[in-house]
Length: 235
Image (cartoon, rainbow, N blue to C red; front, side):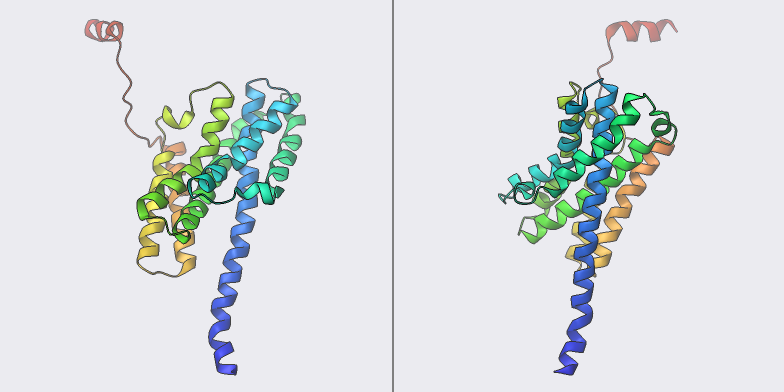
């Protein structure tokens, strides 16, 4: 019996640690996304209600899409803790927004990097949940990307903007897809859970950081207007 406990205990401890870490990162990701939602509301000159709604949408919107796609109970209906965390984050950001004291956010790119952290966390969590639910690799990657970018899409739509993920040319959805693919590949190879968890998360963070600092991105398919072509021909 002692040998059996000794053999099983390390795996059980590791599993418990990963579950705890996932919960902690979910909270961190929720705060990170809620910050981006609250700041976006401030830039659109919304009131406090608008800031709370936008922060909540970006924080739990992707997870809601994930659960609906997997036909699972929506996570925040049974346990609204993450919604409350998003609301609290919006209320904490509101005084700075009211004083128009958001210069530090812009100078240090706090919104961009907090959004990158939220993206990485929720893509990894969403892809893992989809694989655990028996989704195919392609479906799991789609669910993971939706979990990561869905909240931002809802944020921009409610702020009356074309979702930034579709036009800014940065590595955003591409980074999410790269991380989701990496997670599936490592999972399919049967690597340890900590490797399957951390490596895709770091891949997404690295791609987002390179996009923000080095300008890495994807090609634009914008249509060049006739007037622009004439201007170039005379240049």
